[in-house]
Image 1 (cartoon, rainbow, N blue to C red):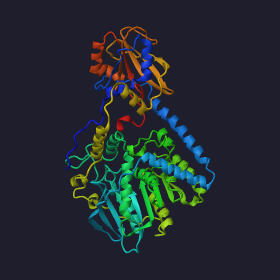
Image 2: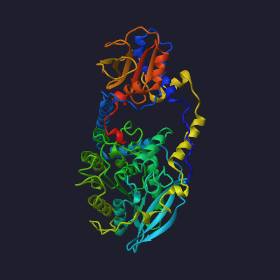
Image 3: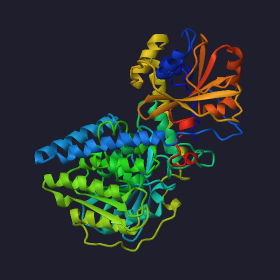
Image 4: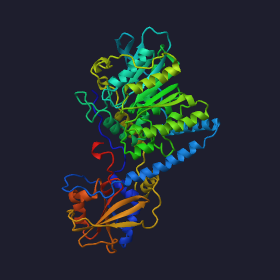
Length: 574
């Protein structure tokens, strides 16, 4: 197995330096008003947490959620107006070109197409098809495991389909995904279904027993993807690139007709199918299942999402789920949903109606369709059969309308590697690429300090000017919190409309009004998770209070932590 890489610090400054550079601008304005001089203003941060006896205060749990709901609703309204304003075929074609450019902006430049170095490690022979065990490299030494279902006794070439998997721990061996691959092969399709990163045979964080150390699927995606954001990468682009290279391999096969190439997948595979419609132009038909809805519905319904499901700047560019399918227009697309799915069926219908308007302008209204199955989330038989009918409509390879009898294979039968993990073959990992990129960026990055660093931080975060003193609320005090000073006044500082930063002022005497004038020096402690909890547990606070006994002492919960920690999505689960 490959040795785990040494940890590196990709940035030249710490969280403490960042907070000093950004200056907590608006909050500082409140403190400036309450002290006679700003000289010697101190910022303390980077505490540890744990062990508090009281549950942390959280008086604004809906603040961040509703702030973003309002913003996304307005973005959606603008998008709908733009789509409804399309009146001609030329305008529709221009719109398609626009969303294609925007999607490229989200996903970034594609990497170089390096040799696939594909090999077949085994063949499973069945009555109507063979299953070839394929390994290829989507990037140098980055192995992708896949099963290629090749029909027997058919005149060549045959239509091809790339199958993308949802969040199944066993990836391509999941029964629902085996089912559509087998059924398509029995109808005359060559199907390549591949393991996603962090699933099946492609764990990124395996232990000595080849089990994930962090959790298969979602947790592997979040860990790898969140690290990539720091180096300017998007995990969804990596996932999509695997799909593009899977298509490259499929098109090397003489059995495959490049005039009929489809893509389908469910849940996380529906995500990838949708993104692939946006980033790859060679598809001739598509069937995303149990994903397409609207960003607004997902946010309002508090639906958790993996890193790959949140394309950078998609909302800023005015993109919604339907736009990724619009990038394929007017090629045949069927949107598959479920009535009882957590991907809201109302959003499925809304996406379909927007696309229907576009396709109608292009004179191809019959090439966009929707099917909503009656049951729960999953690529169940009724949705698979809707996909078969849609693909057969385009290819005429079969007139089957229902699924044939199927026999599921054991996971081990479909393995492409000896023991079911590419780590044994010394495959590179996502985080090894991230580490490499981090080091390159560190070598190029100038070391900034003082005013130069402050300017870069402000420009990077696009912080607005901090003119004047922001408005603030004076909250009712809470007793019995066991703080290191007997009294605390809580202020809700409005840093922008709808957003409050919660600031505590510790004192030895009761205080229920605006911050008093007096001390020439103030300390602002910026909490890591919760000011309320850390005032009881953080040793740094005790040290600061002892060393700065004459200073006014404040703490701050920035948005999304402590007093505004969101109560959405069951925070303990993700």
